[in-house]
Image (cartoon, one colour):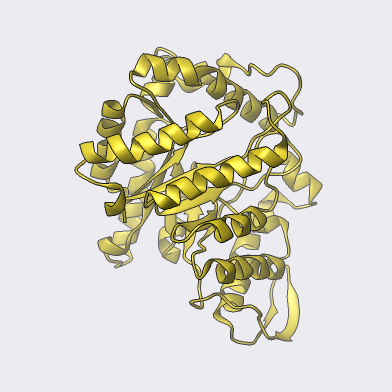
Length: 355
């Protein structure tokens, strides 16, 4: 089992630190995860909004992390390459791969924020084709071999890629959540799968992951080569009640920001967010269901029990969103340590055994 950090960098005035300090604290936590033997550190890409907009180009912060770490792999989760020239995307991540000594993965997804497509003048109906063409260009670029390209969206004469990827390629993760086609395509392409538990029930996770696994097997691929990641909002405390109490306001704010960005609304002074968003996600159950069935906001014992369920499903990597909205760096670092020092041993693993 691999462990990874997953950040959706969200900062606003009122958190008691500058944005510069916030970036420094994220870097400190990635260094901690590296020292504990975690496999990967990832950041989202978003634009023009409080929700995730602190990192509009993941390659830049990944480059900073590359110089501060030794072993942990680094990845965008995801790169919205459909908004950019794929040659620039290829160059950026090849450079970070070189800076890190070959520790970069690529993550892709369709994206979901309406104003991002509008701002970059991208027709959402074109996104699957743009990603496919963009990835084709990136993969050829990373190989280091000269190539020309003529496609639906991009055309250029023969060029010499520079710099290439250290090993001539980057592992590719495909984030999927709703469309069955996304899960099927990921398996068909031999991509690794990335899922986020927070927006969906445990039953939906199981069903959708099965789409990917069944397609992977039917394509004749080896089960041992299949990589599946599941991401959780996480906060570890001595008891579930304490964990929920400490994280509830931050999760409500995160949910509120998500709701606003989906409606095309800018953030305002209503920082508490909307509990109605959480209630909607609970599907008529007690509202704490969103914590108990979709997150690792709980005690170490409960975290180990929940992780085991997803290992039994066949997931190979557990990814933890340990800082969101107003949670502090101290709380973030504590959760990372407790996962390594308390949760893993309950699963019969150690930090160094996560691979």
